[in-house]
Image (cartoon, rainbow, N blue to C red; front, top):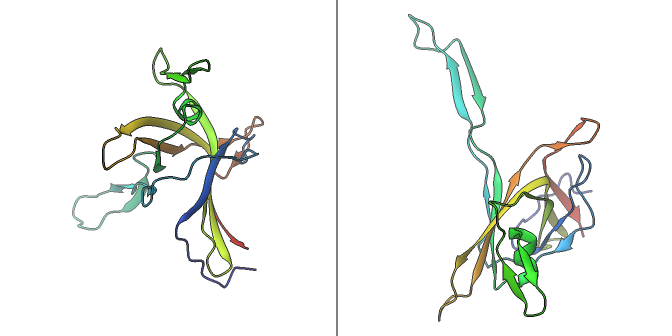
Length: 178
């Protein structure tokens, strides 16, 4: 049991995607190439304040909060294969010459379950899961003498709703003993 132990969540051991499940994380997870060192970030937005102010008082009657933007995990994959680019950006591959061709007709609608595992430290690791992640990706770094080509990917958190309309957990953080 890890309830009383504090995990050391550092480094990415593996990450991957699976078809979206029915309101639950999909399986099996298909590995993606590991991201660039120090290129994974959580972008969880701060909520906006909503308040009811009344005349004659400097203290609001009520304060609430609402989400302003979508939360996402962002990372960059160095020197991706055309298969990885197609999986995360859409489009098609000419397998005769191994040519990736960008999608036509706008931004493709790509969703996966996304899972990221930290390196094991002190007998524990942390697994982050987005049950239903909307994927957007683009080539952001051209290859040059000092840098490899890079594919920047964002996994946006969406609702995890089953076909029966039951809401599941959209994002989770699991501490696992190894």
